[in-house]
Image 1 (cartoon, helix red, strand yellow):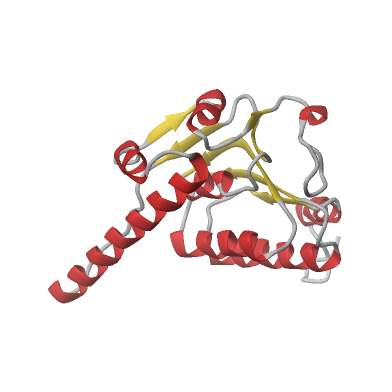
Image 2: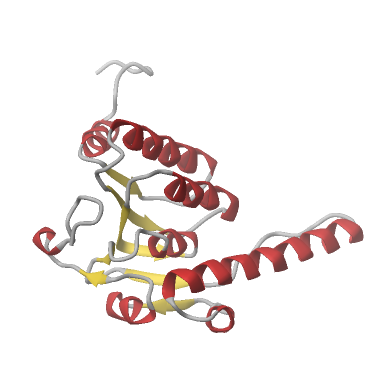
Length: 198
């Protein structure tokens, strides 16, 4: 196989074939490259068919809040439902995107682990810069707690308390907490693929 940009790697080929089935995989840390790719894929799929669900499979340790929010805002922008699936690990921003899926269409595979914690960031610079960044981090923490509360049915205060340190959930515990709606072990048990279907 020749090297170069015109030749698709095996993994690229698999992801391309999955995309044709309206399946997107977040299988790494959330950064600007992956968030731009996922947002573009969602926009493309929504333009091609605004009625059929998109499935987002998540196996991610988390990552950038800003980059994750780009994916979250795109999920809310498009007309089609986004069914989410935790496989392996959905931690931090991965947990946030998992719980942000369309209500009733959020899933965890049986051995998935979900981790919630408060946003963090490196702070440095002048005293004034540190003060500004610390205030921004406080606002981000509150905003994330409010959004997770909306997705889970918990209160923002409960989310802030429970996310003060890393908190891990099994698939069933994640369902009980409100991160997901279903624990699924077989594709036949997944909720329908059309908007509004049961």
